[in-house]
Image 1 (cartoon, rainbow, N blue to C red):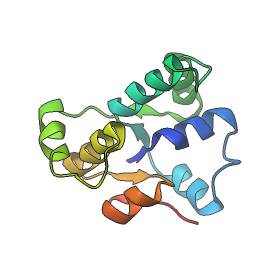
Image 2 (spheres, one colour; image 1 turned 90 degrees about the vertical axis):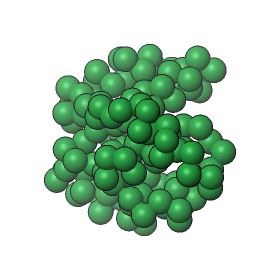
Image 3 (spheres, one colour; image 1 turned 135 degrees about the vertical axis):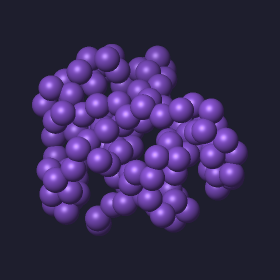
Length: 126
């Protein structure tokens, strides 16, 4: 199983696979795809401020039907504890998402260079 960062989820919804390098596409074909509940929260925030048109529920329902995407459950208390040590980012969503990956030992597909620099579980193929 591999976690998808928020921007990857949006790209898969808007233009399936076109925004992704071939190596990333291949990896997505081989893995079970999941998101952190914190990605769903960020999608909701983006919708509320007008940066994302579809509702998060519609977006995730469509990706669930098309790709088998699901929300990976995680204990919030353990994520918050792990997030305390992730001082390399001030973005609350990146911090929670990275803590989720750390607690669960799951890799993250993300183009975010900062996350890839500081989080060994973050992966992208340029």
